[in-house]
Length: 305
Image 1 (cartoon, rainbow, N blue to C red):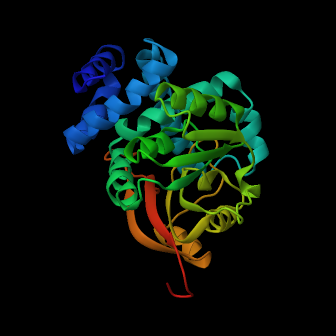
Image 2 (cartoon, rainbow, N blue to C red):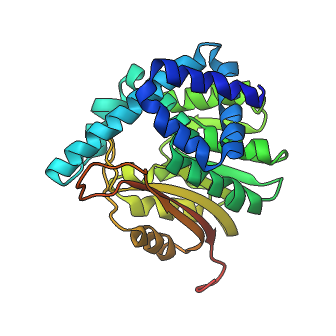
Image 3 (tube, rainbow, N blue to C red):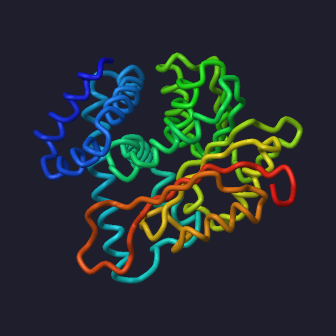
């Protein structure tokens, strides 16, 4: 799939979803070369996995997801807190609904480059996380969802391997299909499992990826405990999180970036790099600035390092 194939995406948005076009062009303007490279990679896998209609169906899902997020943020502004507080509530309304999960995962998949502030985090992942890993790294991905982050790592590290664990059957299905389409089935293995009960002390990993899971948990501290225990001493982790950014399935409300730093440090992880970014356009007079944060972490070898 050539870089020029990004143009059909832009044309589809322009013709079918013109109100979404300014945001997409804003993302591309942030770093045109990076946008085209990442879009080409992700769209190429999607079309190989799901057929020629993937671009249209996934873009439609992205637009719907973005609208749902905007509505959720408006409700959050009105009531002052996230609407759901337990995993059970989210499971009933989203996770147990097959069509809803298909649209949800497809929409999030494209936010990695179609939202400017998420593209910003993707560049941190590429340059400051993947750039630090050995080409033969053993990687664990906690709650891979669509699987795009882990596959990007394998694409960049030709001898690396990955194990991914997710509680959602739909997530395992999508990750597996994309891995096959990307020609990485021999290096990526996915299994349905509650990652919060993951025990890998016997064979710790060189690196861990966990993207936008922590705000979906009732106990975010448990995730940092699992991430730290999954790593060798000196191992690296990439963590992303939403702050004062509502979605129907966001449970834990982070308000300050320092909360994430403190959680990481409490569980033996030091912050090597961090980026917090928000959308250029927000609700007029908003109390809450929705933003996404990414942290590159390293497991400490000693008490202070």
